[in-house]
Amino acid sequence: MGAPVVAVVGGGQLARMMQQQAIALGVHLRVLVESPTVSTAQVVPDAPVGAADDAAAIRQLVDGAAVLTFEHEHVPNDLLRELEAEGVPVRPGPAALVHAQDKIVMRRRLSEVGAPCPAWAAVTSDAELAAFGDATGWPVVVKTARGGYDGKGVRVVSSAAEAADWLAALAPGDALLAEEKVPFTRELAVLVARRPSGGADGDGEVRAWPVVETIQERGVCSEVLAPAPGLSAETAARAQEVGERIATGLGVTGVLAVEMFEVHHDDGTSRLVVNELAMRPHNSGHWTIDGAVTSQFEQHLRAVLDLPLGETAATAEHTVMVNLLGSELEDPRAAYPALMARYPEAKVHLYGKEVRPGRKLGHVTVTGPDLAQAVATARAAVALLRGDEHVEGGELGAGDLDTVDR
Image 1 (cartoon, rainbow, N blue to C red):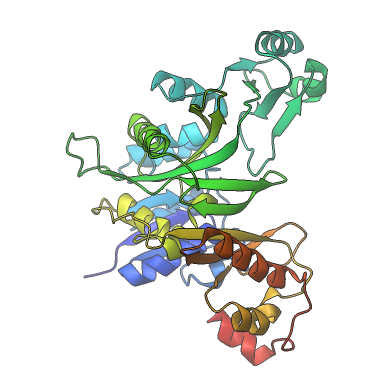
Image 2: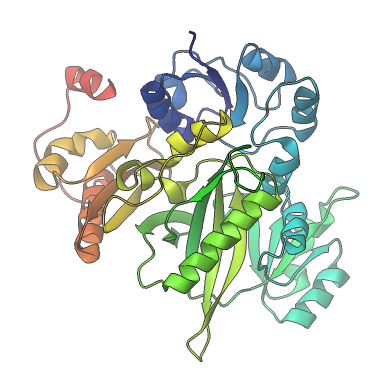
């Protein structure tokens, strides 16, 4: 029996971490990568090079594959519809994926399924943006409908004039998304997975992981606390219900990340507001590799292959994930001797990326019964990888690098 082939578009760290679970499950991953040196190409033997918008490359990628899936959303939806019509299983399908590709389409559909959203409007002119801001209160958040991520394509503006350049650059038929600026207390994320079959009501089996708190640094996720500390059982259940409702209502197959704002009121109550969606494994779910029974990467493979989903319970009282965003070290692995001696409980995940300022190079996970201690340890370990402290134990030699890579 041959291993099922899962075709993946995108060669970043998400597909790289998916490969680890594919090996465990005996699944053959074939990944369309941007170059022979990107993160995933270093660890996946079957990694043809091509662009995500190259129809010929994607058609070659899916030849003989059991399913096509993604590690980013930047794939032409029209091409995916063609492939689906030709019988290629595309998961998530183009009808679902469009909600992660176009923020205005997303807001419209989320409102239809009853998910809690901020006040919003599609605007095409200074006058429309000014009217929205006057009605909801300034400042407002303005987003490009397509292409934004990690804080890109987002502005907080105090007048329509501050978005005039974006408005002037709009192509005919396009619009910007204007949203109220939500006075949130903190940011939460709900990670759910759905497969096409297996649900008792016929809508597909859905499972959710514990709700997490995410901490942002200059628009990029820097830390994740699982489960979200101090979150009431009622609010956690409400957040998971919203995530599951979105997954079912949008027909998602695979992992879905729902980023939310938690807003506290003076009377002690709170409300949730959906911020963004991602239909793939997500930074907010990296903690599941070391802190949950089933990681998001294994679950995504199970879901797109329509296999029964795994248990999502946490395996530790607290799990903390801290991202490594840039480094002063030419190679962060030079910190391994000191890091591993001081923090043997820390789990290090590096993505094989060239060091650049602010670049997401990897993450560290720490689990345990004491949240404050886990946070302190994870931050200290990342500080060593970042070169914030003198690295003890010397630098890694060429032979050591080969051993680490394997």
